[in-house]
Image (tube, rainbow, N blue to C red; front, side, top):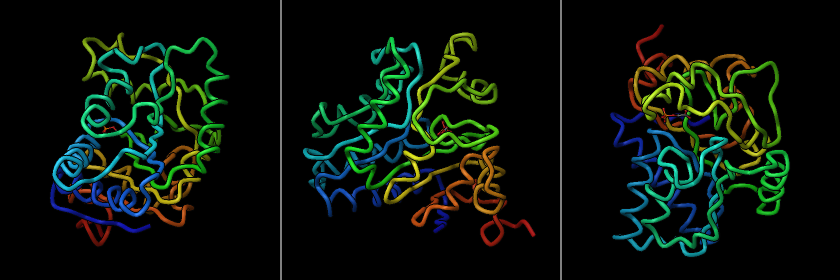
Length: 248
Ligand code: PGA
């Protein structure tokens, strides 16, 4: 794992965008594995700026998002499809037919998951996969569990994730209870992985991700087994990782 410690949230976004942009410039038909949440917003803002001001060209890029809430239509402001349109797709020259987010309204979730895995495989998986990390260590919606699930699947969202995400909904009851998520295989098959994290609330999970045992109870720990992972985080998020932090 390569660890990059930067001074603040804005720098995390800039650094992650630079890595993604370098992949797109080298390979115009790149497949980008994308994530949602508060953390990637700065990354997408910088990619939008690069597209407008530095000719970063998305016209042949394909994107595959990690997850979507079950039951939310793409026009729902809290759906991940809506998030992606708002923060990236509507602001760069990407062909909307080349943007993939699981269908949260599917009537046959099993089929939707199988088709999503077929799509990933047909693309040869992501050239670069962007990941956030949950306060419980989840990546995508791969929540802590007794085993890792390789395939795209429907997951019951952990209570701690519902607590964390309720800030975006009017009430806790409105937070969907299920999501479709790319599984661990879909993530680990990416050529390169970039995980971003900011703030003190991510310090414990970042320490466990980098230094703890590989366990499905801390899903991000599986990244230790991937040959090309870069973690970009601010000083607060790295504060419990020896060398960056003052932990002894
Ligand atoms: P956040 O979410 O970026 O909003 O903290 C990260 C995640 O849950 O993966």
